[in-house]
View 1 (cartoon, rainbow, N blue to C red):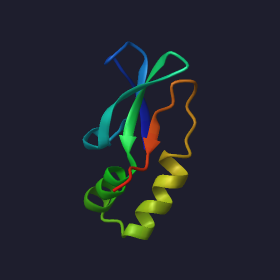
View 2 (view 1 turned 90 degrees about the vertical axis):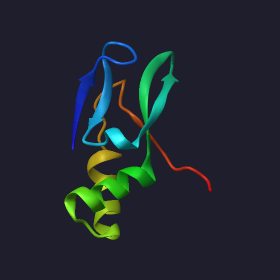
View 3 (view 1 turned 45 degrees about the vertical axis):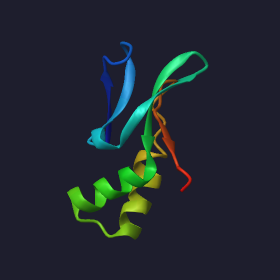
View 4 (view 1 turned 135 degrees about the vertical axis):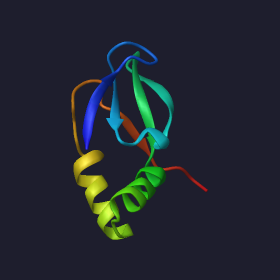
Length: 82
């Protein structure tokens, strides 16, 4: 997983490379825009794209994606209800 700089919605916003279909919007963290991703969609992407089992995808996601701090604009990953 790579985090790269995107220019939307504001220059310098970091996005999670390869998880475009899991991007659900942007939020503000201390008045700084950050990308917001749906965790379930990220897990599904890993399963479909990389052929991982659900357990493998969850473990990979939690350690390599959600657990990657890349500075003040690190994206947010949400667990939705329902």
